[in-house]
Image 1 (cartoon, rainbow, N blue to C red):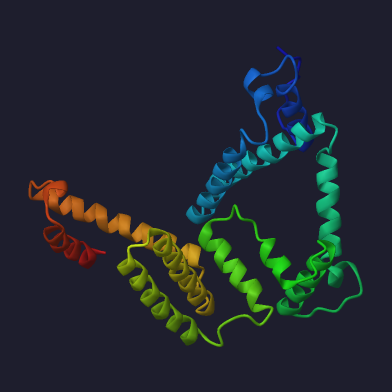
Image 2: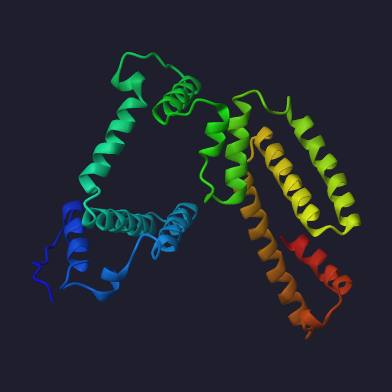
Length: 265
């Protein structure tokens, strides 16, 4: 057991101290055993829960979930502090300096009177500070750990800055049909690797079309999935009301109930 005087109100200094105590010899065995890798997925989960709170417009839940994300930041920082690599103040120092450098129109004498100009300056400064000398560098720098649709849309947007893009939304949409034909050919060949490749191309073309239409592909698919769940729920309810088991019905029979569910939603 460690000595710690509890308080009615805590701040960031208290959080860093508490995490340090949890990682200490007299602290928590579980906390002491953790590594960056062992709690990697926890960071993803906590971030997703913040997004869920935002989507629900639940302010109290958002406050709580942001705290959980902050804990992850402090915990990872503590691991590095124990390795004499960096501490929480170094993290704060780094992000403050980055914000100042990337906002020369606020903290310097650069003029930027529109959002487009701000973003253009931001991209140029980012390339310079990260040592990116080619457009390919900017594409490769997009995190591979991002959700696939989000990463694809971000890569497409950066390729656009190099002039590698469709002229208009119609051209992007037409590409979907072309990729569908190539997928059909791959399916006919029975080559699983080629099928996977062409299906990926089809998905990527859909993301490009979404970008040109001003649609967030990740959010669009999320909404479509949510809609599918709602309709599936009604379909199951309708079959149950007639004493039927969904699993024992043919797809043609289920389609009848599915059509009824679509009319209700």
